[in-house]
Structure formats: C-alpha cells, structure tokens
Image 1 (cartoon, each protein chain N blue to C red):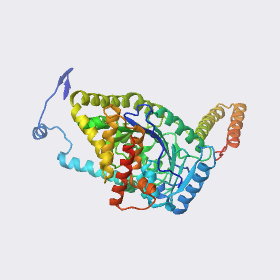
Image 2 (cartoon, rainbow over the protein chains, first blue to last red):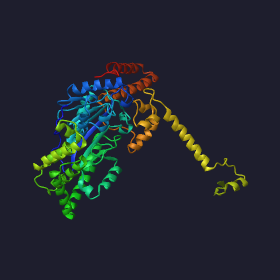
Image 3 (cartoon, each protein chain N blue to C red):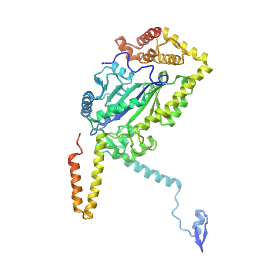
Image 4 (tube, helix red, strand yellow):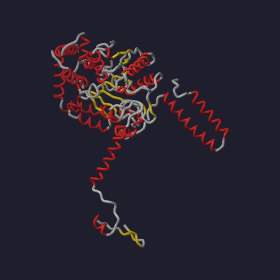
Length: 347
Length: 154
C-alpha cells in the first residue's frame, strides 16, 4: 500500500475553504459488451478488471498511477481508502473481484467493478468544480481511447442504476456548516436542497452521518442537462447561497451569542489539548468547533492546516497505520487523544 | 340534449327517469366495479411488462425492483416502457440525453445517420428512375460501410 499517513488535499488556502473542505467530480461508465457488475460472471468480472487495469496503468491517464487489488488488501487498508474518500464503503465491503487505480497525488481514483464497471473521480480542496470537471473529462477521454463505453443516443451513458443515466456525472462538495447546525438552520438547507433535486449526505457519502458538521451535497439530476449546465447550476447558483447562509449564521453567532460561541470553541480546544481518551465522533465534533473558531478569528495561534489534517488522521484505519498495529476500541481512543493532544499543543 | 328548429334543449334526468323517458342508456356499472376493471387491467399490463425478460441477460423488471440495478445495457431497450416512467420521475421529467457523447460512439452514430439518409435517397432515386444518381449513392454507402465498419476500434 503506497498511501502515507498524512494524506493529501487539506490546503487551508483553497477557494472558499472556510466553508467547503473539498469538491469532487465523478463519472460512472460501463464497458460495452459486458453485463453490469451485479449480473456479470466471475470470469467476466475478471476480464473487466484485466482490461481496466491494463488501460488505467498503461500510461496517458495520470502521473504515477498505482493499482490496489481489493480482495488482496487487508481490512485496515480498505478502511484507509474509505477514510481517504478514494473508494466507497460499498466497494470496501463487497466480496466481488474488484480494484482501484489511484494517481500518485491521490487526486484521481478509479473504482473498478463497484456498482458500475468504472467509477472515476477527481478530488480537490475547496470549491474548484470547473477544475475537477476539466480533469475528469480528460481522464474520461483518455480511457475512451482504449475501451468502448455502453452508450445510447437517447439515454446517454448507460449505468447499472437507471437513475444515473445520461451524463453519469455527479458533482459534490464537502461542506462544513457548523454555524447552521448551532443555529438549528440546517434542516432548512436540507429541505431547500431536496426541492432543488440535490442529495445531502454525511461525511462518508450514502447512508453515513454528518459527523463533525460536514455535509456532502451533490446533484441528483444526470439526464436532460449538459455536464456544464449541471456544474454551473451548483457552482454559480446554489453553492454561493449556501455559503452565504453559513457565513451569515456565523456573523449572527458573533453578534448575538458571542459568549456562547467563545465558550464552545475555547472549551473544544481545551478538551482537545488535554483529553486522554477520545472517540471518533467526539473528536470530529470538537475539531469542527475549533475549525469554526479559527475561521472566525476567535481562536488564535491554531494552525488550520493541522486541524484539517486531524479530521483524517483521527480515523481508526489512519491511527492503526500510524501506530503500526491492530488496536481495540479503548487503545484507539487513547491513541487518538495522544495524537490530537500532541498536535494541538504544538500550536 | 336535443336540437329542434335550431333551438338547443338540455334536460338532466336521473337513471330511472331516463329509462321512463325511453332514453337508451349503456348498462349502468357501479364505480367500484369500474375501478376494479381499471386496476386489474393496469395490474395485468404491469405484470406483463414486469415479467418480460431481457434477451441478453435474462433480467426482468421485477428483479430490478428488488435489486435497484439492471442486468446489462440491453435492459434499457427491453424494459424501456417501465424504465421510462421511472427515469422521468427520478430526472425531473427529462427523457433524453443532451450531454457529452463518446467520441467513437459519436463517429459511429453520425455514420449510421448518414447511411440511413443515403439509403432513403437511394430509394427515391430508384423510384424516380435516376439510375446514375442511384449508382453514385450506392457507391457512397458501400464506401462508408467498408472504410469504417461498425466494430472499427480506431
């Protein structure tokens, strides 16, 4: 496994990084002539893997591409990839022949034999949807030089789940919305998003909770609109409003509940600097408050980049990689508190 | 309603009085019976389309309902009718792709459209006894099919 403990994409100066942690463009593609994954035989799944691996590692896709054969990987390494948002929970847990190709900088990952034959994504810090769109489009074109995609003039790119047909593209952003959560406005955002045909999910996508006040927002419509239209609607019309809504809620907190805000952020920092045992959820909640405090300049001398990295480094598989052995939940809580305490006391 | 000497006369009668007045009415059916017929006919057609199997992979719409995923790309043709309703609902009414087209598929689709048009032109030319023109069109079709056969990968 070639992933290091520190992880990529946690720049604190990316566009709108005060509210948007990262953004992603993902396309779903299937190779013509094969059944979809759930109906493919073992032999066909192996053939899809062989073709994909050859194409994805054969050069011309991205720098330093490497391959991880998931049935061969340890449970810890599979979880590490989920924590890193490089594969889905479903892909980690599946028992099919499957793999993932990852670029050297971890910006690109291509899941093979997930729900579709190919699920290709580009991740970037902050709000840079045009950038991730351009990159994934280039990867898509490069792959298409070597494989025929299942495509119909009417339905577009054919996907195993018919609700993904058309462009097969999903743009998503990981939003940090602590002020909307504190002011109980988050349900309004959820309702508005639903009306706009957007999906609101938790930290690890489908079926996950909104740990650390992070919400993943993505388009659900994939048909009848061009990729540019879908991206521009999200990037130019919808996200600026949600960002604005969160920033206004932060301003209101300072104006009307300054003591409450200061208490919550300083208390969170105090616990992180002195706790001896920390659960993942508790640590994420406290880090979320510290992150809010730093952005509002209520907390001084805290390195934002370190805080951003900690969201990743406190996850169980990352801790196991760092310590270098398997641990039970009590050991994990102690190891988590240790690493957080050391990092937060460094300033 | 009757029209006599250009004057329209409209009378509202209950079922019994209409029979007394000698007006011929279709046999009366209670609403529940009518609804039952509609439901049965709808269920029958739904059951027929749900049981239909994809000739390529053997998948049925009933199986799709359980798993949420289709068996193969051909399922989109076999199960087009029930899928159209479902996709329309999920995609806010959209029924056609307007986005990116794979470059090779684009070439192949464009070629298919050109050949289709040429075949029609050939029919017209033959009907109009324009044999020289027909021969040219036939050559064009032949060239297109030979130079870029459908399974050409480059």
